[in-house]
Image 1 (cartoon, helix red, strand yellow):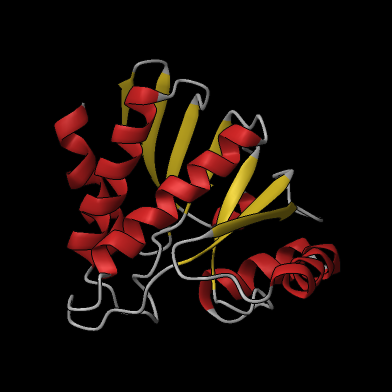
Image 2 (tube, rainbow, N blue to C red):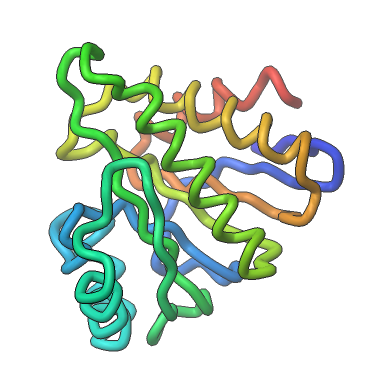
Length: 180
């Protein structure tokens, strides 16, 4: 399913984000930037040592990556040229500014993409796995934040939400319907 806002195509796909051929993919990273499970582990495995090496350099320079912030590295062996690493919030019942932190993941990721002149980006379902963010709420934040961003910035031409599981795929498609 896809929608077009201004010049930007926003679509929801089911698949493996490491196979994306867009300019960049987003890694749902942890604060250490050193790899982990889920999407983070898959991206580090598929992209190889170059991604980890750059993450280590970033961490040595700035320390851990705070929740809601984003950094960029090479795509290593991936088809995507770049990986934008963002740290989503762990769900704590919604009483710890989780919604604002998740929104910041998308805003800071897209700002970094624009700053690096990237025209296309694949994004996973940030925080909906091991961080246990409620999937429906996460999808609404993701789709609405991206739509709001592209309404005021037309330099990113193609945004994909790549869902690994059927449940997220159906939920994200439903969230995107209001923009079709």
